[in-house]
Amino acid sequence: MYCILDIETTGGQFNEEGITEIAIYKYDGQEVVDQFISLINPEKPIQPFVVKLTGINNAMLRSAPKFYEVAKRIIEITEGCIIVAHNASFDYRILRTEFTRLGYDFKRETLCTVELSKKLIPDQPSYSLGKLVRALGIPVTDRHRANGDAMATVKLFKMLLAKDVKKEIISSLIQKEIKSGLLPKLLDIVESLPSKTGIYYIHNEKGNLIYIGKSRNIKKRVNQHFTDTSGKSKKIQREVFAVNFEVTGSELIALLKENEEIKINKPVYNQAQRKSIFLWALYQVKDKNGYLNLRLEKADGRKKEITSFTSIQDGKNSLIKITERYNLCQKLNGLYETQNACFQYKINECNGACIEKESAESYNVRVEEFIREMKFESDNMIIVDKGRTIDERCAVLIENGIFKGYCFYDLNYQISNIDILKNIIIPMQNNRDTRTIIQGYLKRNKVIKIFKF
Image (tube, rainbow, N blue to C red; front, side, top):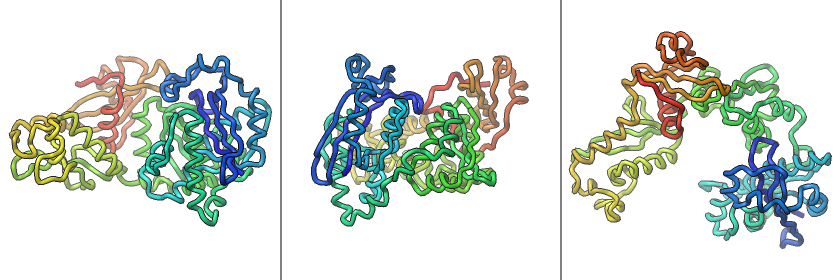
């Protein structure tokens, strides 16, 4: 017997979320035999982004039952059942946390439809619930509401049950009670970590570094390592002895430190990042007609790149946005294969470089504008971002286009005087990865200030 559920929460810091809505369908493998659906008064405000996502607001929940009023019904309907959810570790953790607040030790076996889908329906572009059910033709209504998402999971699970004819895969993925919560050792580690931006270092019993990571919420990210069921996460869970951390405040500093320290320390479970983490790059190529083409290719250290990406899909997505923003041609940038005009020209969103209607000189001005914006080859600049405390700031120094390092400071004269700044800078390596990290961060994020000197 299965209980397929979905939970909506208030959002907020790890283990401080409250339930706003719950939907549970009791499923016997053939049909739904019982159900429980209810809004819940979390007795705390809902985060604004959650209101926008779910449509559930504080006013809707004022007259809703509090969790303790529905707790008995949840225990009864899930008794003797395996809890099934899409990203079950999240929903199960939220439920256990609520019951723990009531002094009740809620334990059930769990089954995650994300992990099940990866085994039974491999090679999907995304395993998020919305994208997966659309790809499988499963109808879904009331997305991001507990009832709609739970019913979509019922239909998905029914399909997965049918595909696992011998039920061997499902049996292998059921998390038994012994694994239902974090082991005491792992729980103690998680509780000691801050919900802040920074770097974390996972050590084994011999003191060896086995993994380095960065996160905007260290506690939440480490907890994900400890509850995830992937092969790498299970190895980390078996070997972890201690987790150290360094709060950076700025995500840019965290990204730069993670990149450098992985390359220096070479942790066994950071294999993909030991070398360059940016395997694809964007290059400019002048074609026979004199037009500057932007080409996404595998990174080649012998060629001068404009910027680089962690994956080909990341590169394609960025190139599409670049083409749109600078009114470039999809055909020239390799996004649309045709012997004639590109599709964008047909809908008046391309000026006709693809059929030489727009001159190369006019077209290349916009390409060069993009290239110029992406580079800081001769720039002398200081990037100022958040520090580790309210009164502190961090500074990233780039001199003659070369990344020199970073520092934290309290007083403005420390960065307005370049000689003082150079004395307090913590030096770091300058390489193509650091350039791409800084370029990408400046494109995606708003920093406090940029000084040019």
